[in-house]
Image (tube, rainbow, N blue to C red):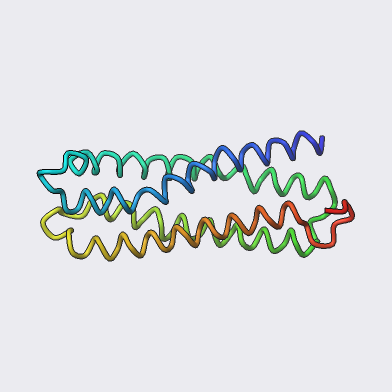
Length: 159
């Protein structure tokens, strides 16, 4: 049972968090292009559609991503490691990443998509830059969690 839970946990993490990380990282670029389209640049004309698609990907996969910590907790309980420091740190970091995504990244994306174009160009560039930085923080949090899952300080597996 442990191997099944762990397999689902890892697959869910790859298939849910990976697309969020990529889509959220690409979003600021397309949001900037959409805020200040240049008639001579045809790619800028489709930037708003691409940004909207990237936001839908982030939002949709965020909902699917809920299974990652659920199966992670189930796996941890099965292994008897719920009180290990590395797992508690991973849970805290995962919670922080989820809060950053749900309360900062997704609302900022939505705001950039709905901002009126005539007022958007100057202000949206700063918002997009801040969003890019926060997306980097989100991705870094997940990278740390992955390292903790692999290294597992205090593990007896020899890793």
